[in-house]
Image 1 (cartoon, rainbow, N blue to C red):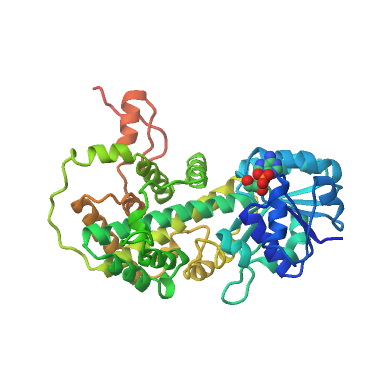
Image 2 (image 1 turned 180 degrees about the vertical axis):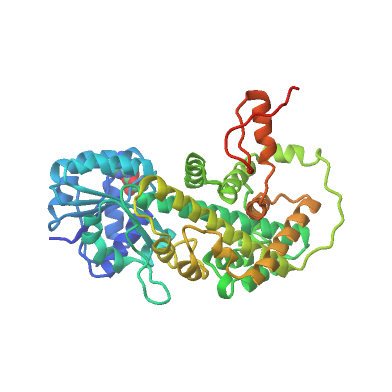
Amino acid sequence: MNDIALIGLAVMGQNLVLNMARNGLAVTVYNRTRERTEAFLGGPAKGQSITPAWDVPSCVAALSRPRKIILMVKAGTAVDQLLDELLPVLEPGDIVVDGGNSHFEDTVRRTRRLRETGVFFAGMGVSGGEEGALLGPSLMPGGPLPAWEQMRHILEKIAARSADGDPCADYMGADGAGHFVKMVHNGIEYAVMQLIAETWDLLRRGLNLSPGQTADCFAAWNKGAASSYLLEITANILRTKDLSGDGFMVDAILDTAQGKGTGLWTSQSALNLGVPVPAITAAVEARMLSMRREERQRYAPLLPAADVSLDIPAPETLGKALFLATRLAYLQGFSLLMAAERTWNWGLDPARIARVWRAGCIIRAAFLDDLVRTFAPEAPLSFIASAPEDLADAQLALRRVTTLAAAAGIPAPGLGASLAYYDAFRSARLPASLVQAQRDYFGAHGFERPDRPGVFHGPWKG
Ligand code: 2AM
């Protein structure tokens, strides 16, 4: 009898299987299209304790009880179709883990559906890309707690490990918690990638640095508390030459950024929950603007340019601004997680989430160690305000960099949104009083006053 089955042998699925086999698990694999299974067994899986199944019932029959099945199929109807096939051959106590990029609302629905059957359904976020899946991903399982207790020893074995040896796999909470956490992970990923891209643009077009110099900047910033996987790969990317030409690879790539929708989902969920995540939304919108390439090309020569002279900041200033904006993006993500917890009571714990993001995943970053120690759910801003002198310097840097962007006419929506978010929290008084007055003027919506209780109307029309 095998320990576990994995269904769906695209690259992520294949690599998770290889990871499990390397960790001593006997794995059954099944894929809808037989040829994919055959290619896997004849190729990467050759000589390992991996056995094929050619249909769903024999896949299940090969497993010891309680059966453990990980789905790594395309998000959407494929998961429901497989559940339809699996349920007749599963028994109460068996566990189905959905490791795909499912929307958390689908996961909530499926968890409810399976609750009646006694079969456990657990939505699990998996991050780390292909390499992470193979060598150790960050795993964010949610759903029924007994499923986690049964799966724990396996998931901890195959997950990445932080520098101090902790496995980056932990129970995120009930129902849709695992996929929600993964969604917010991706939202933060969108934001940080955009912030890095804007900073690169400012280094090139604002500071006129050469490609090599821009790579050196990112490599230099990737040190100590500011170091992160995304900075590391950015430096590597910017140094890579285009083998089919004589320039750099990045300059040979079409400037239209695509996505699979998880950033959009994060923004949509944040709007639904009433939580501002401006850096994430700016990143989603920046990708949308990038997709309108034809319009950009058409209008580029027609729209007047900026012509404001300005002291050009040193590259270090851009590094400091980027680091603050990056932390503000994580802060927005954690604020969204807190709001989800207040709404659904899944048991989301910011420290536990930060802990599983410390290694294996795309947004791994050294400062997550600090965040684990200092993050207070009731006062999220304390996480960036905990070192006031550094913050004074960093906010000045972010201000100078967004000023440079505006003066040079280089779009920096992520950096700008991050600064506005920061400044909103610095503003004990916002112009929302005028918005309330306008609402009262045209719609008699009423307003409150800080100096006395009650709802009032203004004497607008005499
Ligand atoms: P395939 O090889 O048969 O296409 C990513 O697309 C993975 O999801 C692939 O392994 C793919 O199987 C699988 N997949 C997509 N739709 C599916 C479905 N409706 N049922 C089962 N597997 C599916």
